[in-house]
Amino acid sequence: MRILFMGTPDIAVGCLQKIIDEKHDIIGIVTQPDKPVGRGKKMGMPPVKELALKYDLPVYQPIKARDEEFVKILKDLNPDLIVVVAFGQILPKSILDIPKFGCVNVHVSLLPKYRGAAPINWVIINGEDKTGVTTMYMDEGLDTGDMILTSEFELNDEITAGELHDIMKEEGAKVLKETIDLIEKGEAPRIPQNHDEFTYAPMMNKTLGQIDFSKSAKEIHNLVRGVNPWPSAYTTYKGQTMKIWKTKVLSESSDKAPGTILKVDKEGIRVSTKDNVILISEIQMPGKKRVLVEEYIKGNSIETNEILG
Image (tube, rainbow, N blue to C red; front, top):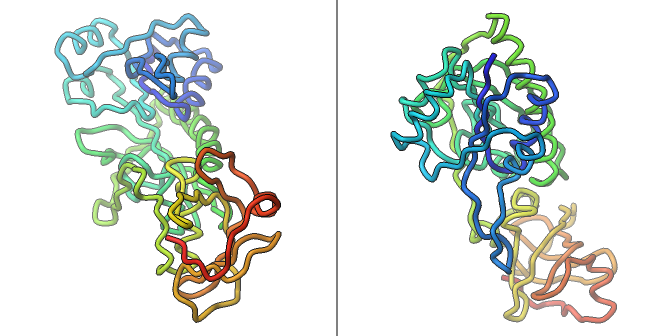
């Protein structure tokens, strides 16, 4: 089966590597154009391109995949199946109709929940106790196609978005392999989504990481985990941005105003919220590395009764 792979970021690398390892006939890789990265703004290539070049696979980087000229290139390639994993562009019907076995997408949520750009972050921010991977046949909607396979697993209340990303990278590859096997055998099911139950996972931005201490300690803890490592949670202390990397919900409560620093010791910074006290144990001040509060207070002071945010 002639497979064309479309993907861009690191999470798509696991799926591409799996297809390579399975010795499928990969006829091309489509990924986003190179772009400036880091403070030096040097041109960097997408992680999927790096892997493709390692295996001497043909790489295509259209600015807009829907352009007629590029669609013709895809038609000439004549793929049997297109696999799409976090490609970063919406595919038009003119592409979806090209492969005889369709376009298959690996989505890192239990569809129809968390359709959209950032399901890994939002399942944590919303405090879900389970998530998973879904493969589906793509249609013209946003993650609305018929499902093929689903893999479900539980989440603990300590996992971060970065850690879940790594799990999804591995799990997505496993489910994709099983999906391709079923398609090759002609045994892949088509399971319609229940569109009445859909939820949406919009893109992340930096302002989402701002902590509102008038919310519950649990909500704040979920936010801190859900935006770690990007865009990261933050508040302000005496006018300076303080990034918050690790928290814990304590059983105690306080009648002080939300955001009030109640106590600072080697365990961390105890802060009042809407309900329970939250313990901040890892922070990062401007221009500094992230450190445990235990280390930070050896050379710096954090005063009680100051209000964060």
